[in-house]
Length: 252
Ligand SMILES: Nc1ncnc2c1ncn2[C@@H]1O[C@H](COP(=O)(O)OP(=O)(O)OP(=O)(O)O)[C@@H](O)[C@H]1O
Image (cartoon, rainbow, N blue to C red; front, top):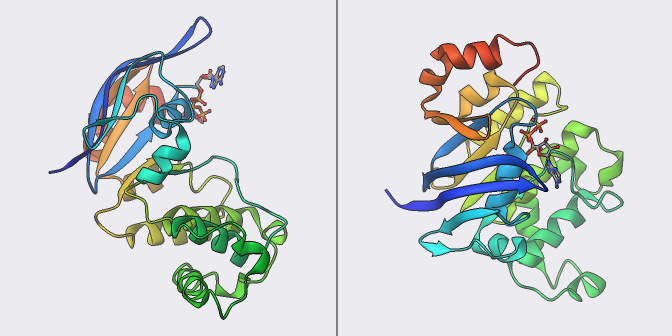
C-alpha cells in the first residue's frame, strides 16, 4: 500500500503549553481515518500541522516521502492536501456557483482576471464541471443563490463540495456535520461514502455514530498522545475510551 502521509515524532507547543507530544504514524492512500478526542485534545492543531497552517515545534511531516515540514499551507494544498474548517470558510456574498467557479479556476490554473471578464460561452468546460458537481451534491437548485442566504448546514455542505472539487489526494474534514440537522448529516455521510475510493479521508468528528459509520481506522488523541490507533470496533469496545469519552457526557 502506498504511504501518502507520514508524521514522525511531531510535537506542538503554544508558548510553554505542550498540546501534542511526539506523535508518529502513517496514512496509506485511500484510508478513511476518524480522529476523536476530548475538547482541547489537539485535534484541530493536529490537522493544522498536516496542512501547514501551523509548524510543528519538533518532528517532521512527509507527503509521499517528501519532507514538507516547512512547506506553507498553499503549497501543500497544491500538492493535494486539502481541508475544510470547523467554521465556514466561504465567500458568503457570492453565489454558490461563483464560489465553485473560483475553486475550479484555481484548480485549472486559469488566470484570476478570468473572473472579471468571464462569460459562460468562453469557459464552458468550467461551467459544465461546476454544474456536474452541483448536480452530484444535490445543490443544483441553489446554483445562483448567495451563500449568505443558505442555512448553516447547506453552507457546510458546500464547503465540503469545494474541498472535493479541487480533486485532492488527502481531504481533511474538521467536524463536517457540526451544526447540521439529522437529515443533512445523513446526506453528508452518504456523499462521503460515494467519494472515490483512492481519496484519503481524515475526519475529526464529535458524532461517534457518524465517524464509526465512515472510518475504517480510528485515531484517539488524549493527553498529548495517540491513545489508540486501531479499528472502529476496537475503539468502540475499549474500556478506557468508554470511560474517557463515551461515558462522559459531551466529552467527545
Ligand atoms: N494558535 C493557538 N495559540 C495558543 N493556543 C492554542 C492555539 N490553537 C489551539 N490552542 C490551544 O491548544 C489546545 C488544543 O486546541 P485544538 O483546537 O487543537 O483542540 P481540539 O481537540 O480540536 O478541540 P475541540 O474538540 O474543542 O475543537 C486548546 O487548549 C487550545 O486553546
